[in-house]
Each structure stands twice: as structure tokens, then as C-alpha cells.
Image 1: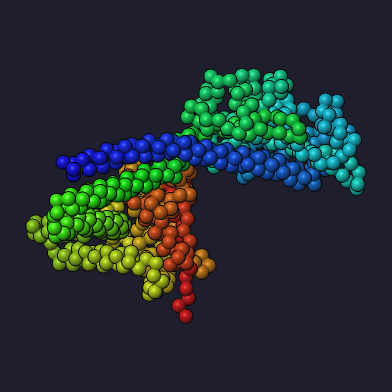
Image 2: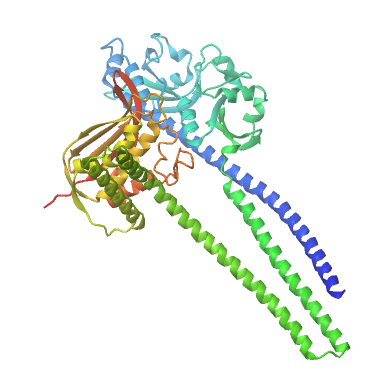
Length: 599
């Protein structure tokens, strides 16, 4: 009866304490998660604000630098000196559009009286701008460099004005005007945000007729031409003044909306609103924090249960002692009871030890499984070749078509492939061990070994390999270089077989010597690599394939081999190829490996 009472008391106590602990932990975590999320959003807001301000300053200074450079242009000087009647800076604008971030640049040349002699955006000339522009009046009176951000009749823009002197005489002004659109476009790519530049409402009237973007929202001019239409539709349903008057950021619907005011002097010109998808914000560490908190809570409850269990038995033991004293029981019975309790504790300790051992073994097996998975990724193609060769021998034997030449060729292929598998094991085992033997190899023989391993697979997939391989001798690690080439070719194959056009699946291989380097170019026509991920393809475990088809370690290992072991370089870019008058886009891998002199 007594022991049941102790058990019930222990269970009730443990249940009450557990419920209180869980409720307190959940409440604490809820507050803490909100705090961490707010900190994360504040940090993102601060970083984006700082970056926008920095980019604006950089663009402003770049505009000035461009204008200062043009101030010494001979054609500009000839126009000011009336040696020529007209110049054309549109070619310069096109070059800037193609080669720099200046996608829309306007130029204007004015004489020393403030009369416009040339505009790149209009054929209009010889109008007296000093009558309509205060900044030109100030420049004529006091010629010095001006670098501003302003809102004019066409757009909000960066404006740089540089006075031009000849023999210490003020003869005219060169003016450059650049826009904000490239800034918003660059931020969309680099920070995964959707920007919209909302100009202050007081400028709307002067922009209505000649606006550069011709985009207006709730009587506000939108200064970035590439603004996302989804953002515009979203803001159409909202009060835009609430967003442009906010401080820092707000979270609404599925967006983190950050407001960066654009201020020149003491005047606010516009609001740079940045829309970031909440789902794109990395909160992995917040989730891990919650998981760890509940893990510690679980450990605490386990420890609490053990303590209550031991305490209940301790109290029960004391109660037994009193009963034994009262009933004049002998000490042997009490000793037996204590031994029983000790054995119970020992059993629990042993169980915990076994559990820990099992967990350790599972962890060890998981690590081994990951390594085996990496090896399997490298083994799939060679094993397929061995299976195909063996099946071919068996089939030709059954059909009585097997001759010695086919028999020997198939067995040699199996032996070479098996040796490659063995070498692959060594490469995984000694991947970071520098003590490997170099060998002088022929570039022709190198690719012959590669094609022996891959030819049948590529042929079955209708993939044509066009080779242009120069005969070279190079001292290097042969197996590792073969492993890199096979990785690149297999990646090209995996992309090519996705193409419905199975008649023009092509891989181009060029090998030649450039100075003291062996250059290998491997190009396909599979459509190329997306610009969003091309910079990440050499990262470990990064893959665009299904989890069952790739681990993402192949190209990472290739880069490690080329860079660390072969002391070379590997890179990738997208190139266009013309095949039978049709233009195809594809990825080109560029590998450069130093050629060591044999002397």
C-alpha cells in the first residue's frame, strides 16, 4: 500500500512539474523567437540601408569621374571653340551601356554664357538655359565642379557639372546625367529584393509631361524603369504614404519592407522601398535554437524523473527501515532491500551505457554511409561499363559470335575499369595526402583512357564528342586528372540527355599548350548554366539534380584536385556554339594545368 502511494505521488509530481516546465519553455521560446526574428529583420534592414546609401554615393562619384574625364575631350573643346558645329556622344553612351553599370547616360555641353550647344537626348540646341536653371546661373557666375542628386523635368538623376577652362579662361560646361535604374536592378540580383523608387509627390507636376519611366503610382513618380509589376499591383491596393513615411522597416503580408530615404542636402527627394520575401530570410538558426531548447528540456525532464524516482525509493526505503525497526526485523532483510535498490540503479546505468554505445555506433555508421555514398557516386559509370562488357561477352558467347578479339577487348575494358575503381578508392582514402607519385603522361593516351570508360555510355545516349587534342607530355597525377575530366563530361552528359533534340547532342574537347600550361576546354550545347547558380556549382553538396541522382560533391572534388593537387585552375562560363547553322548555348569548362619540364 505504501509503495503504491509513493509511486502515485512521484507520477503526479513529475507530471505537474513537466507541464509547468513545458508551458514556461514554450512561452519563453515564443518571446525569444520574436526577439531573434526582429533582430534578424533589423540587421537585414540596416545592411540594405547601408548598401543602398553606399551604392548611391558610388554612382554619384562615378558620374562625376566620367564628367571630369569628358571635360578634356577634344571634340567637346572643339564645339566650345566653334571649330566644329556638332559632336556625337551617343557611341560613348552605347559603350557605357554594354560595358558598365551606366545603362542610360545623357550628356550636355554649354558655353560660358549658359547656352546649350549639344544634348545627347535631343537635337534641340542654342537655348538659353541660364534663364530656366538656377544651377547653371550659379555655375556661370562661379565656375566650379558640382555633383548633385536632383529631380528635373525628365527624371530623378545624378547630375555632375564640370567647368572647362582653356588657358585659364572659362569657356564652357560639360554636364553628365545618370539614372537610378541600374542601382535597383543590381540590388535585385545581389540581395534578392524587389526595389521601387518613389519620388516625393511635390515633384509629380513637373514630371508629368516628360517622365523618363512614365510610371506613376498614387500621384507619385516611380524612378526605376525595371520595377516589378507585382510590387506595383501590391502598392496600388495600399496607402503608399504609409510606407514612404515609415522609419526603418515594417513586416506586412509576406514582405519585409525597408524604407531608405534619398536625401540631398537637407531635402528629401524620394524613398527607396525594398521588398524582401519573408520566406527567403534564413531563420535556420532560430529553428535550431528552438530544437536545442526542447532537447535540453527533454534532458531536464529525464533527469528530473530519475531524481524523483530515486527520491521516492529513498523515502520508501526510510519508511521500510522504520517499519523494520518497529517490527524488529533483522538487518539482513534491510541489507537485501538495499542490494535490490543498488542492482536497480546499476541496471539503469548499464541500460544508459548501452544506449549511448548504440547512438555512437549509429553516428559512426552515418559517417561511413556518407563516404560510401560519395564513392558510389564515382563508381556508378565504371560499374555500368563492367556490367555491359560482361553481359556483352555472355550474349555473344550464347549466340556463338564471340571471337578472341572481342573477348580480349571486353576483358581489357573490364580490367581497366576495375583498376580505375581501385584507384578511385585510393583517391578517396588519400584525397588530402600530398605524398602521391607524379607520372609523365601523353595527352592523347590520357583521353583514350577516358573515352574507353565513357564511349559506350555516350554513344547509347546519341552524344557526339568532337575532339581537337594536341599531342603533349605532362608530368601530373594521371588518375586524379582523369577523375576531373570524367566528372565534367558526366555533368555535360546529364544535361544533354534532358534535351529533346537527340540528334545534335554534342561535346567539344579542345586541348592545347599555352605558354607553360596545358589548356583543356570542354564545351557542350545543353543550354548553359543559369546565371543564378553558375557561381555556386563548385560548392560542396550543391547540386541541381534530384537527391537520388547526385550528391553535389563531383565538381567540388574536381576543383580541389585541380587547385590543391595539380596546382592549376578550373572555371566555367556559358558560350554559344554554331552547329549546322543553328546556334546553341552551353557550358564551357576551362582547365589550366602547369606543364613541368622533364629535365
